[in-house]
Image (cartoon, rainbow, N blue to C red; front, side, top):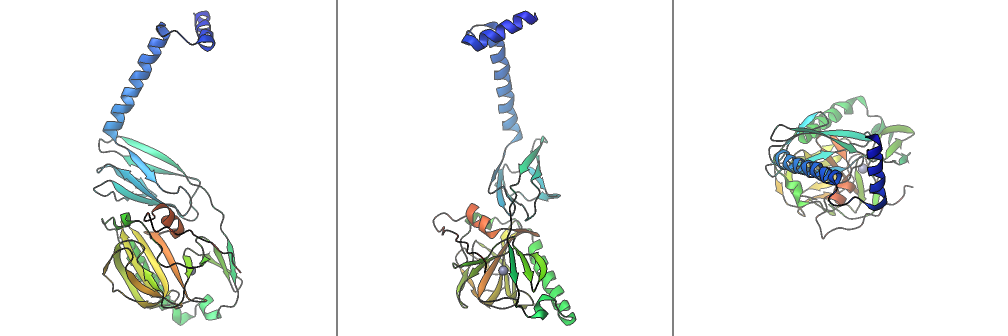
Length: 309
Ligand SMILES: [Zn+2]
C-alpha cells in the first residue's frame, strides 16, 4: 500500500497524472466539493471588504451586507443600511489586531489585521511663554471645560455617512506639523501632536473637507483658540484649531468645499496656520491618511512635507 502511494506520487511529478486516473478524479471531486462549500458559505455568510491604509493613524472604510455585526476595539461598530462602516488605528496601534464579524446568519469570523508600524518625529519648541506650557491654576478650570466640550462633540454617534463625499484639503499651504510627532516644549516632553498643521495667512478661508454637521463652534479655547468641529457621521470628525473667525454656527449643515471659518493664530500657537485633526470618536487618526485614502477624486494635491527647524 505504502509502495503504491509512493509510486503514484512519483508518477505525478514526472509526467502529470492521466486525466482519467482514479486518484485524480477523487482529488477533483474533493476540490469541487470544497469549492462548492466555499461558494455556498460565502453566499450565506456574506463578505467584509476593508479599504484604506492598514497602518498606525489609518482610517479604513469597511463594506459588508446590512445586518452584519462588526466589533472592533471593544465596541460594536455602527454599520449603515448600505453596509458601510469605519474603523481606525491609533498612533500607537499594535502590529496585529482583530475584527470580529458576525454575519446575518449567525456565523462568525475573526479577521486578523496587520497594522504597519510607523516612526514619528521629535520636534522641539523652546521659546513658548511659560504660562502656555504649564498652565496656571486659574486656567485649569477653563482647560477642563474646553476638554469636556470637545469630548462631547466627538462622542456623537450619527447614522449619517457624510464622509462618503471623500476628503479635500481644507486649506493648502506648507505643512509645518504632522501627525504623531512628539513635541518637546521648553525642554518638557508633551503629548504627541495629532494635527496636520498647514501654514496659511490669517483670514484664509477654511473649507469643509467633507460633508457634515458643525457640532462645535467655540470663540476662545485656552490651547486651541477659536475652534470648530465638523461631524462627518459614524463618529468621524474634523477639528480645526487656532482660527481667526467662525463663518458658520453650531448645528449648521455643511457641504464639502463650503467656507466654514478663517485661518488664524489664536490659542497656543507660533504663527498663523490651520491645525486639522481627524477623530474616530476618541481615536485620533492621521488627516493625511484620510486625505489619501478617501480623497475626493479630482482635487488631489500632493502632500509636501517640510522638515522642522
Ligand atoms: Zn498643530
